[in-house]
Image (cartoon, rainbow, N blue to C red; front, side, top):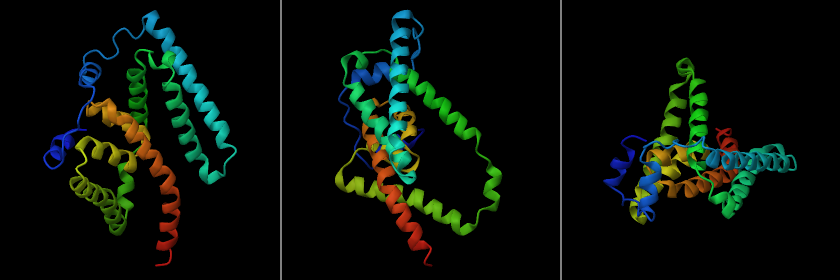
Length: 213
Protein backbone atom coordinates (compact mmCIF):
# COMPACT_ATOMS: atom_id res chain seq x y z
CA UNK A 1 0.00 0.00 0.00
CA UNK A 2 3.03 2.29 0.29
CA UNK A 3 6.21 1.50 -1.66
CA UNK A 4 5.31 -2.06 -2.69
CA UNK A 5 4.12 -1.20 -6.19
CA UNK A 6 7.23 0.85 -7.02
CA UNK A 7 9.47 -1.83 -5.55
CA UNK A 8 7.91 -4.70 -7.50
CA UNK A 9 7.82 -2.66 -10.70
CA UNK A 10 11.62 -2.79 -10.68
CA UNK A 11 11.62 -6.58 -11.12
CA UNK A 12 8.18 -7.25 -12.62
CA UNK A 13 6.25 -5.81 -15.57
CA UNK A 14 3.86 -2.94 -14.86
CA UNK A 15 0.14 -3.63 -15.00
CA UNK A 16 -1.32 -3.17 -18.55
CA UNK A 17 -4.22 -0.85 -17.78
CA UNK A 18 -7.23 -1.28 -20.04
CA UNK A 19 -9.42 1.48 -18.61
CA UNK A 20 -6.97 4.21 -17.71
CA UNK A 21 -9.58 6.97 -17.81
CA UNK A 22 -11.80 5.15 -15.30
CA UNK A 23 -8.78 4.49 -13.13
CA UNK A 24 -7.79 8.15 -12.99
CA UNK A 25 -11.29 9.51 -12.53
CA UNK A 26 -12.47 7.12 -9.84
CA UNK A 27 -9.34 6.62 -7.78
CA UNK A 28 -7.39 9.87 -7.86
CA UNK A 29 -8.62 10.84 -4.38
CA UNK A 30 -10.51 13.96 -5.51
CA UNK A 31 -13.80 14.10 -3.57
CA UNK A 32 -14.82 10.44 -4.06
CA UNK A 33 -17.90 10.89 -1.84
CA UNK A 34 -19.08 14.19 -3.29
CA UNK A 35 -22.80 14.15 -4.06
CA UNK A 36 -23.44 10.80 -2.41
CA UNK A 37 -26.42 12.16 -0.45
CA UNK A 38 -28.12 13.65 -3.48
CA UNK A 39 -31.54 12.06 -3.92
CA UNK A 40 -30.68 10.85 -7.43
CA UNK A 41 -27.65 8.99 -6.02
CA UNK A 42 -28.67 8.09 -2.47
CA UNK A 43 -32.00 6.35 -3.24
CA UNK A 44 -30.51 3.93 -5.83
CA UNK A 45 -27.59 3.39 -3.45
CA UNK A 46 -30.02 2.31 -0.72
CA UNK A 47 -31.48 -0.20 -3.16
CA UNK A 48 -27.97 -1.53 -3.78
CA UNK A 49 -27.47 -1.96 -0.04
CA UNK A 50 -30.83 -3.73 0.19
CA UNK A 51 -29.71 -6.10 -2.55
CA UNK A 52 -26.40 -6.70 -0.73
CA UNK A 53 -28.29 -7.55 2.48
CA UNK A 54 -30.56 -9.90 0.53
CA UNK A 55 -27.53 -11.64 -1.02
CA UNK A 56 -25.96 -12.00 2.42
CA UNK A 57 -29.17 -13.51 3.78
CA UNK A 58 -29.35 -16.03 0.94
CA UNK A 59 -25.69 -16.93 1.47
CA UNK A 60 -26.22 -17.51 5.19
CA UNK A 61 -29.28 -19.61 4.41
CA UNK A 62 -27.28 -21.76 2.00
CA UNK A 63 -24.50 -22.18 4.57
CA UNK A 64 -26.92 -23.91 6.95
CA UNK A 65 -27.13 -26.73 4.43
CA UNK A 66 -23.38 -27.35 4.59
CA UNK A 67 -21.20 -28.87 7.30
CA UNK A 68 -19.80 -26.66 10.05
CA UNK A 69 -16.30 -26.79 8.54
CA UNK A 70 -17.58 -25.51 5.20
CA UNK A 71 -19.87 -22.76 6.52
CA UNK A 72 -17.49 -19.86 5.87
CA UNK A 73 -16.53 -21.19 2.44
CA UNK A 74 -20.18 -21.51 1.40
CA UNK A 75 -20.98 -17.99 2.65
CA UNK A 76 -18.03 -16.42 0.82
CA UNK A 77 -18.64 -18.37 -2.40
CA UNK A 78 -22.36 -17.62 -2.38
CA UNK A 79 -21.85 -13.90 -1.71
CA UNK A 80 -19.21 -13.66 -4.44
CA UNK A 81 -21.22 -15.63 -7.00
CA UNK A 82 -24.50 -13.80 -6.35
CA UNK A 83 -22.69 -10.46 -6.22
CA UNK A 84 -21.03 -11.09 -9.59
CA UNK A 85 -24.35 -12.15 -11.11
CA UNK A 86 -26.05 -9.05 -9.70
CA UNK A 87 -23.31 -6.85 -11.15
CA UNK A 88 -24.25 -8.08 -14.63
CA UNK A 89 -27.69 -6.50 -14.29
CA UNK A 90 -27.67 -3.08 -16.01
CA UNK A 91 -29.95 -1.60 -13.32
CA UNK A 92 -27.40 -2.57 -10.66
CA UNK A 93 -24.22 -1.99 -12.64
CA UNK A 94 -25.12 1.65 -13.36
CA UNK A 95 -25.75 2.68 -9.73
CA UNK A 96 -23.35 5.48 -8.83
CA UNK A 97 -21.02 5.56 -5.81
CA UNK A 98 -21.33 1.84 -5.03
CA UNK A 99 -17.55 1.39 -5.15
CA UNK A 100 -16.88 4.46 -3.00
CA UNK A 101 -19.46 3.54 -0.34
CA UNK A 102 -18.21 -0.05 -0.31
CA UNK A 103 -14.66 1.17 0.21
CA UNK A 104 -15.87 3.30 3.13
CA UNK A 105 -17.38 0.24 4.83
CA UNK A 106 -14.23 -1.79 4.15
CA UNK A 107 -12.13 0.91 5.82
CA UNK A 108 -14.43 0.83 8.87
CA UNK A 109 -14.04 -2.96 8.97
CA UNK A 110 -10.25 -2.65 8.75
CA UNK A 111 -10.20 -0.05 11.55
CA UNK A 112 -12.31 -2.25 13.83
CA UNK A 113 -10.11 -5.30 13.17
CA UNK A 114 -6.88 -3.38 13.74
CA UNK A 115 -8.23 -1.82 16.97
CA UNK A 116 -8.60 -5.32 18.45
CA UNK A 117 -4.88 -6.06 18.02
CA UNK A 118 -2.96 -6.46 21.27
CA UNK A 119 0.82 -6.21 20.88
CA UNK A 120 1.23 -7.69 24.38
CA UNK A 121 0.30 -11.06 22.90
CA UNK A 122 3.62 -11.05 21.04
CA UNK A 123 5.52 -11.29 24.33
CA UNK A 124 4.41 -14.88 24.80
CA UNK A 125 5.18 -16.10 21.30
CA UNK A 126 7.95 -18.64 20.98
CA UNK A 127 10.89 -17.84 18.66
CA UNK A 128 10.18 -20.97 16.63
CA UNK A 129 6.55 -19.99 15.99
CA UNK A 130 7.57 -16.43 15.12
CA UNK A 131 10.15 -17.73 12.64
CA UNK A 132 7.59 -20.09 11.12
CA UNK A 133 5.01 -17.33 10.59
CA UNK A 134 7.68 -15.01 9.16
CA UNK A 135 8.86 -17.70 6.76
CA UNK A 136 5.30 -18.52 5.70
CA UNK A 137 4.41 -14.89 4.94
CA UNK A 138 7.62 -13.53 3.42
CA UNK A 139 8.79 -16.85 2.01
CA UNK A 140 5.56 -17.32 0.07
CA UNK A 141 5.80 -13.74 -1.19
CA UNK A 142 9.40 -14.20 -2.33
CA UNK A 143 8.49 -17.46 -4.09
CA UNK A 144 5.55 -15.73 -5.76
CA UNK A 145 7.75 -12.90 -7.03
CA UNK A 146 10.29 -15.36 -8.46
CA UNK A 147 7.57 -17.32 -10.27
CA UNK A 148 5.94 -14.08 -11.46
CA UNK A 149 9.29 -12.99 -12.89
CA UNK A 150 9.58 -16.28 -14.79
CA UNK A 151 6.03 -16.17 -16.16
CA UNK A 152 6.08 -12.36 -16.69
CA UNK A 153 3.15 -11.59 -14.38
CA UNK A 154 2.64 -7.90 -13.59
CA UNK A 155 3.35 -6.34 -10.20
CA UNK A 156 -0.24 -5.29 -9.36
CA UNK A 157 -1.51 -8.84 -9.86
CA UNK A 158 1.26 -10.19 -7.63
CA UNK A 159 0.46 -7.69 -4.87
CA UNK A 160 -3.31 -8.23 -4.96
CA UNK A 161 -3.12 -12.03 -5.06
CA UNK A 162 -0.60 -12.04 -2.21
CA UNK A 163 -2.96 -9.84 -0.21
CA UNK A 164 -5.91 -12.13 -0.94
CA UNK A 165 -4.04 -15.31 -0.03
CA UNK A 166 -2.34 -13.99 3.13
CA UNK A 167 -4.94 -11.57 4.52
CA UNK A 168 -8.31 -12.62 2.95
CA UNK A 169 -10.67 -11.26 0.26
CA UNK A 170 -12.12 -8.34 2.35
CA UNK A 171 -8.73 -6.59 2.20
CA UNK A 172 -8.51 -6.78 -1.60
CA UNK A 173 -10.52 -3.58 -2.32
CA UNK A 174 -8.41 -1.61 0.18
CA UNK A 175 -5.15 -2.57 -1.53
CA UNK A 176 -6.70 -2.10 -4.99
CA UNK A 177 -7.72 1.40 -3.95
CA UNK A 178 -4.17 2.14 -2.75
CA UNK A 179 -2.83 0.88 -6.08
CA UNK A 180 -5.41 3.00 -7.93
CA UNK A 181 -6.47 -0.04 -9.94
CA UNK A 182 -10.09 -1.26 -9.85
CA UNK A 183 -9.44 -3.89 -12.53
CA UNK A 184 -7.60 -6.20 -10.12
CA UNK A 185 -10.41 -6.42 -7.56
CA UNK A 186 -12.21 -9.37 -9.17
CA UNK A 187 -9.00 -11.41 -9.79
CA UNK A 188 -7.89 -10.67 -6.23
CA UNK A 189 -11.18 -11.74 -4.65
CA UNK A 190 -11.28 -14.81 -6.90
CA UNK A 191 -7.83 -15.89 -5.74
CA UNK A 192 -8.85 -15.28 -2.15
CA UNK A 193 -11.89 -17.53 -2.59
CA UNK A 194 -9.72 -20.25 -4.13
CA UNK A 195 -7.39 -19.83 -1.17
CA UNK A 196 -10.30 -20.33 1.22
CA UNK A 197 -11.42 -23.49 -0.56
CA UNK A 198 -7.99 -25.07 -1.06
CA UNK A 199 -6.67 -23.78 2.27
CA UNK A 200 -9.33 -25.60 4.27
CA UNK A 201 -8.11 -28.94 2.98
CA UNK A 202 -4.40 -28.12 2.92
CA UNK A 203 -4.57 -26.58 6.39
CA UNK A 204 -6.15 -29.71 7.82
CA UNK A 205 -3.59 -31.90 6.02
CA UNK A 206 -0.58 -29.82 7.15
CA UNK A 207 -1.87 -29.72 10.74
CA UNK A 208 -2.12 -33.49 10.81
CA UNK A 209 1.32 -33.91 9.25
CA UNK A 210 2.95 -31.54 11.75
CA UNK A 211 1.28 -33.34 14.64
CA UNK A 212 3.35 -36.42 13.74
CA UNK A 213 6.62 -34.65 14.64
